[in-house]
Length: 177
View 1 (tube, rainbow, N blue to C red):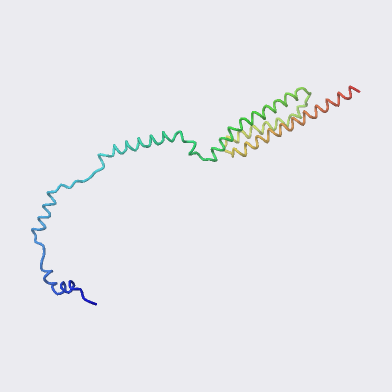
View 2: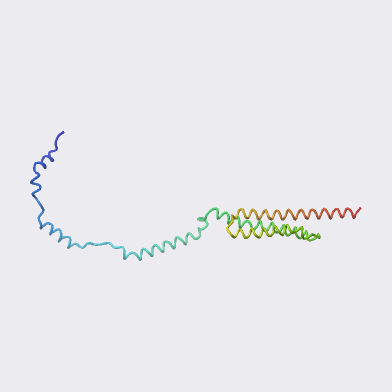
């Protein structure tokens, strides 16, 4: 391998390089130049109030604009449950009208109060389900139980009405003979 000429030169003249030192005047001149120059220090302190005001304006606009889009950011499950609860109002109106209609029809007959006891028990259970809904129970399950409660009441009332109507028909047939 060829030796580098520069390396050889430096190695052979090493003492001459080590002899030269910068003079004291050079360092004094450098220090005086540093003292004369003003060092500008950038400080953010004067700009902090403006930055805080800008952030507050940005956040205010952000929240104001997103207030209308709140429904988009909601949890889809919670949104679906809320819609389910709202739709239940229509279902409840339908079933309550049906139950009330059947109860009015039953009033035409002399009904033993013990027969209506099961209807009253179901009505009490329904009220308990409403309370459970307020305690954070799963709305889907509670609403399903409420609809089933209405269906059972209707079924019982229809059975009672059917039995009374059959009895009335039999009585009419006996009277006609």
